[in-house]
Length: 595
Image 1 (cartoon, rainbow, N blue to C red):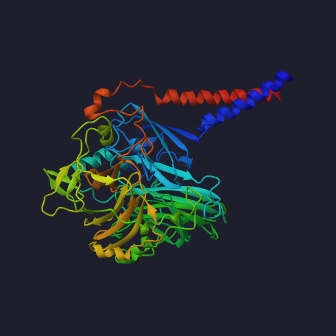
Image 2 (image 1 turned 180 degrees about the vertical axis):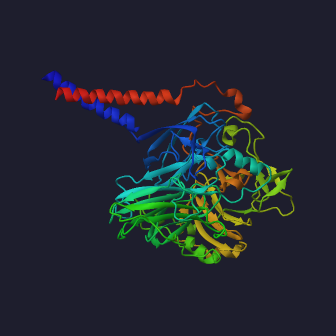
Image 3 (image 1 turned 90 degrees about the horizontal axis):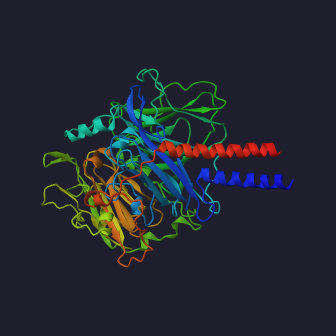
């Protein structure tokens, strides 16, 4: 009996330990979640044409990373592509840790057939984000997936707990892979109209005769009367999309880590790189299924009709298939001021808690003195030294061979210049350069994004959220500050800038490191429309920036420091996980035999 009791207790302990290990949780301190990402090519036909796409663990799109505020995340990435790879984490602030940011200015790329483990903490964040490959136009072939940060149990969410969650990865898509699209840009041409829009890696439902037969489409199964939290990410190349669900209201609840004032919309514009959460109640009579639509925006929508993603919302008691014309957006892009008003309506929910147990609006950003202003102007691509390039303030960025923060730590000189102009230099021709912004630690920066290009652009800043205080058409001038929202502006990491318009943001420079500022439109980003901001604490004592990680890769001027990697394949690690599962099964069998 004593032996059986001992074995029983041992088995229970083994189960708990094994489950903890399998789920990636530490048994002490802040919990860990661990993921293995095997990044490789697979063949898929999302628009009916077989093509090479980038999959993670054989899935396109990739798996969800699901964690909670303050969790530590390890993602062991195995690069089985035929070119170098970096993954970046769109909207994750990486507090004190630009070493894990996953862009070329801060990290050496993962060579083919190598692996690298990203390790970071989800410090003081909640909300909806996504990851994607940041190099060589690879996002145009996939490699992306959702990243969810949940509230801690002690922090209430500002709405009733949903009955379920649904993630949508939407984006424009070409039937050519990223290497072919790169070649088009390298030849000095524009990409032209996409071939379609995907919803969760799938093509459109055959809603009319223009859609070919045999295309796999997304179906979302729901139950009547229930409310779902729907997270929508535009992971596409360069097209703004309007998202809508036929006959259903979209109650806006969160965007990129901040709860919003809850407002109902029939449809919503989601620009490249942006993420939103909506609450959707299944309150229809289910006489048929309903269309889920993501259609191209700010283009000639008649000509671009085929660039429309269509999925199906299926009630469990549905009486028939969806049919008839697709629902149309509520606003007309020929009246851009009315379209802009939708974005202006996004306000912060100042009575809600975020990652901490205090109201989000307790930070009085509108009362802080602005210490520096950068006016960042984008123009249509132009020829520089015989190549088509895109610019900010007349500079097309050249990524250095040695990542900038790595160069700082190892005292490599001449890698970059801290002389990025705070406004366009009208008397200089466009040029290639490695010029970045010299930020002042604990300064309060105003950034004006002025879009003089011909299409909507989304601007993103790694490592930070910023307050979107104003946007308008025309040219920004100093007197526009009188129109700023200094009370409940939304704080986010990616903001749209309409053509012929500007957007003003305010940002507290409290996160030490070197951080990427880029346009999310992949074609413009690939052509050099980016820079970085370097923020260094002159009194650094090990508390405001993390040390260089022990597994940092070396390249460029520091390539000689890189040791040969002891290559262990993803298969061996997966087999190790399978062995652990087998051990757990044996323990369960032992329990049964004891019983």
